[in-house]
Image (cartoon, rainbow, N blue to C red; front, side, top):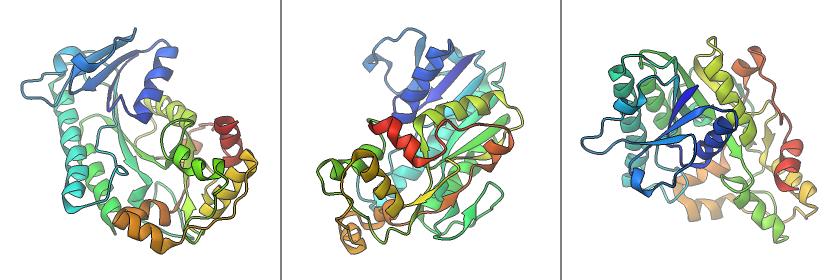
Amino acid sequence: MKIAIAGGNGFVGKALRTHLLNHQHEVFILTRNTKSTSPIEGVTYVNWLNKGDQPELQLEGIDAIINLAGESLNSGRWSAARKRRILDSRLSATKEIKRIIAALQHKPSVLLNASAVGYYGTSHSEKFTEQHYMKPSDFLSDTVDQWEKEAMNSGIRTVLMRFGVILGEHEGALPRMVLPYKLFGGGTIGSGKQMLSWIHIEDVVRATLYCITNPLLSGPVNFTAPNAVNMKTFGHTIGKVLHRPHWISVPEFMLKLLLGEMSILILEGQTVMPNALLEQGFSFSYPTLEKALQELLT
């Protein structure tokens, strides 16, 4: 297949690119500056989001398009200006993706648009599935809600990939969460009761291909492992896998002082079930946290 990826140089994008190339697919990476890229066999870099760019001229005949583009949520405090950039970067990229699709003579069969479990808001007790329809209750849920609404009128089958916390060996949240344990200073963050809906990066890329090839999957699809854990259990499991103690607690007020509103990413959470994937027969390679961490950390 020919598959285009916007945001293809990020954590998930690079993992997808490698997986697709290993399975003999042709990859097109949408980037603002093709001159800064390194040649990779099987990858075509396509300029976009610059004045005068016409990426559709190089994308005729693609089978699927994956939109992962948007400013990172966790690279700095959420000032009013930064929150506007986080939202605008997602909406503008998605609008351009839709324009590209409309301009293609032969449409791709599916758009996979990134999203997040932040759509559901936060809860210590409720289990959320794709059947839950929520009203925005905070900045994250409002951002995701607007992003998804922008993506859903693409004119082709659209999958909203609601990512949980993605675990990878060298990128994403896990290396920062593991570091205190490697320094023998790991422990519970906040109350420890906040739920963490996580997924191994390998299951992310496998589920993405599954959504591309399964026409019955559309609309919201939760990209989470079937066994969410609370933050205290998450920390204990890291300690167990690394043979390190779990003993120093980080109080909520300290994180709120350090991170401001962005502390919601750590101090709040939700249990999100991957019902759509499971009902369509997807099998997780890493359904449990301990198995995932054993593969990533040892």
